[in-house]
Amino acid sequence: MSSETHGILRAKLMSQDGNEHLISTVLKFTSVKLLSAIVSIIVAIVTSQTFALNVYQTSFDSLSLGHTQPFPGSIGQDGWFKQAGDGTAYGEIENAISNSGGALHEFAPQTNPAGDQTIDQRSLEPLDVTLANNITLTVQFFAHTNNLSGTNAYDANFGVRGGPHPGFEIIAFGLGGGHFTPKSVTGVNVAASFFNGADNDQPLPLSVGQNLAWDSWHTLSLSINQLADRYISITVAGQSQDLSAYQPPRSFIDSLALRGQLIENISGQIVPSDSGGPKTDDHVYWDNPSLTVNFVPEPTTILMAILGISGGQLVCRRRRTW
Image 1 (cartoon, rainbow, N blue to C red):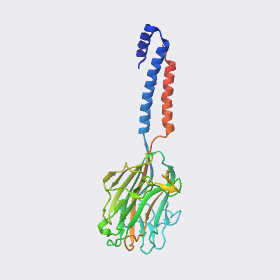
Image 2 (image 1 turned 180 degrees about the vertical axis):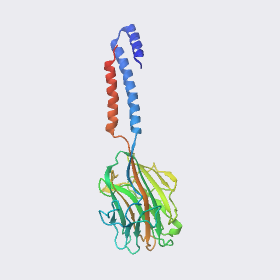
Image 3 (image 1 turned 45 degrees about the vertical axis):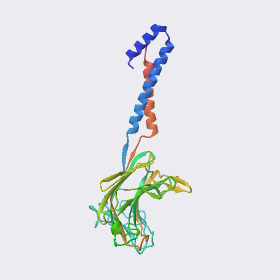
Image 4 (image 1 turned 135 degrees about the horizontal axis):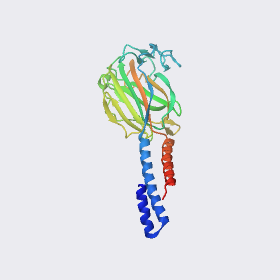
């Protein structure tokens, strides 16, 4: 309401009954409504603004070739280290099979016990993602087995984990195949789980990333909204699927089901399996992993914006003269 309108309203009211209190009440009510509308607009604008952070990205191209080593890893391998791998299992930076340059290769030999993981990991600067409205993990993968007629399960995984206790899953996906059916029939299948209110035992009903070709490169991008406690979407080989109806997995401490809130590491792994048939020599290659996080403003930022506009209104009201 303009100052001219305020003046006209005041004059009319005064000419009718001279009720100064009524004038103040009407104008105050108008100011409150105006302030409320402005605050609503400010909150909408501020909360719609996000800022993106590129947490980690590598092509492996410039990294030193060779097997990964136990923590802290080999010089020249950008902090990637061997977290697990017994017997003849290994992880390595190699350039024989890659999109271009280098790639992380992990090998799970059939001579190792079932479930004996090969894991390569890189520590990340701890990052609290409580207010993240978009966490996106993108990576390219290449799956290989020495026996496509094998009916045992193929089992590989790539993900980001961390706190409140080490190992809590933030965002991750798996690769599967075989499992009582020849791997040549199943192809490579992308998998991820969701929290159903009690556990993470149910897989997401994915329609993308299924029956993919072995010995070929594929690109996957998975996104979650940590703030809303929901998946966002998954894209594989250019095809996307909305996942916003599902909650990301929980980690459990005793009977408490908790979401991880602190990014601490990124890792790849592959596991030999005899589920469905005799074990095979299985390999997975990872390339061009990228982890980005979008944040919404902290509540204090929103509060300061509201207080700023409120303070401006108070100053204007104090300076207003009749």
